[in-house]
Image (cartoon, rainbow, N blue to C red; front, side, top):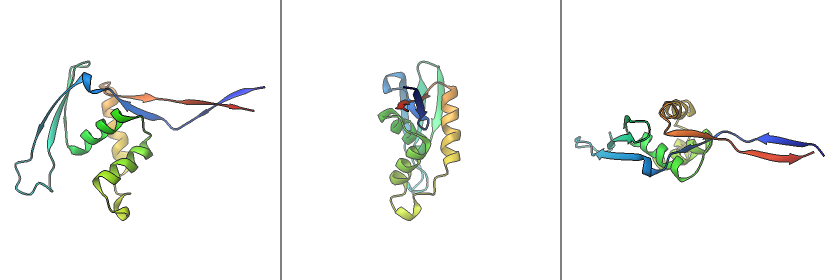
Length: 120
C-alpha cells in the first residue's frame, strides 16, 4: 500500500494574546461609522509595533481563534463587516494576503500546514 499526502490549503494562525500588548483609541470624528477605532499592537517577541485599523485587528483575533485559509478568513471578515449577503465578496483576497504577509515578517502570523494522509 502506497501512502500519499494530500495538501490542504495553507491555513494561517496568529500568536496568542500572551505575546501582545494592545492599546485602542476611539475615533475623534463625530461620525464613528466613517472610521473605526485605531489600535496599536506591540509584539513582545519581535519588539515590533503596528498601527492597525479595525480590519487588521479583526484578522489577528480571527486567526487566534483557529487556523483559517485566505478564503475562510475572507468569508468570516465579510460576514462581520458586511452582513448583507450581496456585499460579502467586497473584501478582496489580495488585501488579506498582503496584510498576512506583513504580519508573517514580524512573526505575529505563521503558516499552519496540515497534511492529510490518503491511501491508494
